[in-house]
Length: 137
Image (spheres, rainbow, N blue to C red):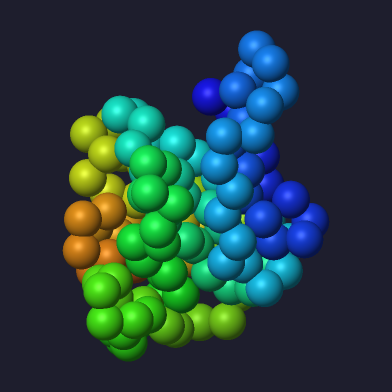
């Protein structure tokens, strides 16, 4: 499976051997900068110019979380929380090897560690005035 982040805000899952689009997720209000599949393949996280990282359930194409970085606000009743904070484009995302955490790197020089299960921010790591271009566990 290949994940594709598009300039129009869409994320697509494509069969790499055939090019067939298996799923499409629309949630970003701007271009998608980065994405990562969870180790078990059941979730995908995308980061974008709209200052969000979005975690999707691959099987149902339902958004689990929209991570914006600080206080929880409901996305909708059936979803967990939306996290809101600094307005900085998300430049990098990744899942931990266990799939239980998500890391995001922002244009304003912060790395945030989130629970992939609850959407709760667990850590904030300042990286000075440098933009964070890559994160990896």
